[in-house]
Image (cartoon, rainbow, N blue to C red; front, top):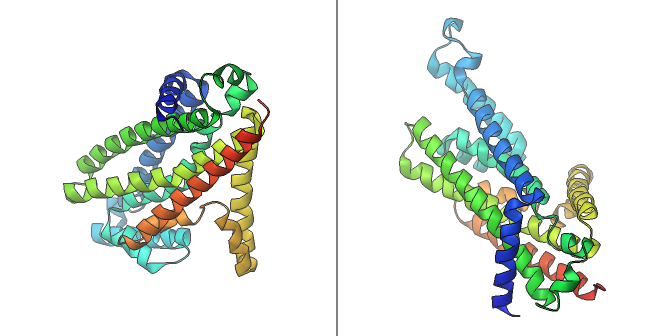
Length: 289
């Protein structure tokens, strides 16, 4: 493994990724989803939207009704776990918690549209035949993954910073330290949740060698496993095994209070990432390029 060559590949692909269709598409989708989600949440969490001043309901009662409603939504989202519900609704700003949950749900899906073109783009254009003699397959494989990961990290980090400033300006009743610490927790959790999905797309790209096939196979497998796992788990406990093919449920461990489950989820995300990257390397090594 030549780290210098992998670094050159990562730098070269990153410059191309910033100007490429997958990079621009992901950037637009990511920003649009985050801004729309933030605006929608801000509108939905206004108690006076449902209880106007002339309704005869006091501000305290309106907020109580809103909290009761939000507790019900979060309980449904997390399967009724009261420990996580109390932490998200009462111990932390509810707007940030709602953004946290929806980000864990949506961002791993969006990141698939960024990382589908890692190896498969070079294979489909046959340009990989000219690159391989100059650098090894492993250096190319890991360099492409690193460039995608770097791009995602910078975009999500910049967006989280902007959202943090907005939360500090709007939530004057919440301490700045709590907002910054919770924002950092959200960023790390979402970043770790997307990490194995990017590795999975690297694996699928190495397997198929076609960007279009990578999108359909990767996104299709993600959606199918999620849906099948949901219905199978309702029929039998054995059905929950489907959820472990991908870290579909592990990512929600990040919303629990304390550091125990957070560290466990982080470790599992790294294990999933390493496993998918290793399988992708096996597929790429055996391909006739």
